[in-house]
Length: 376
Image (cartoon, rainbow, N blue to C red):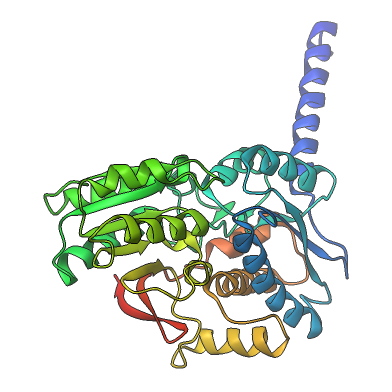
């Protein structure tokens, strides 16, 4: 029996359409690397500007571990390399860099993006291209609202950080008069909202709010807003330079400045903050998402210091430690894929890894940070 001409045309159209869909799917998953081909991870991060320490130190820590892996033969003969671009902590540049890394750089995955607003700009481009989005340096909630798989977080959320901060201030220090200094963008606003929710569980509210604009040091208005309320503790969701300037000015301008406790979220960069304050970290605490890099009792900290310091990468700090841990976990997933490395297989192996997520309240003593309390 023969089909009518119209039916044949429709049938052929369906076959062609199915072929195009399959081709498109295969293109998306046609990511198997050839033998000895370099595994290239794309990173856009601040390498200049007031937040350059974040991108530079995270990159140095990750590079230290990948250099170590490559020296031992790489991943089944494949070296791991990071293609790095500077976004100055500006969302539009991060967006442009992400497109360039994917289209021109043909990276296997995106790795170690820094900051909430820059990550928000880059993420839709990565998801559209089915590119894995690995270990961003932010605790933003929108990364946790996405279907997990292509997104791999090692950081606890900002909600978890603020809950730990609130618990420490209220339960350990008996403080209830708490204010906030924050960066007036998606990062700082999420910190503000998270802290408000965390305090609400204890039946209290933020007593005062002060903010500044991203990539500026305009803190005078924040000083004015917070000084009048005389808070016993101020939570900081900002970069290290404006945070340090705020602490110094508040101490000078406010009679209670020396007795006020300042406690910053981890994104500040603990060591950068301590350096900006010239070591004057009295009553300045930082929540961190890893154990102290100087902790001799922690095997991971010991491994980091041995590889990082012995290969002349510099002095230990939390940011390079985070980059080191991120690279180690990514390497674990790459190795688990075996010799036939595809994005689909990599995402599957990565999904099987569950990083431990803790918040460490830390203080600065004798040139090093030490843990006061770990949550949960």
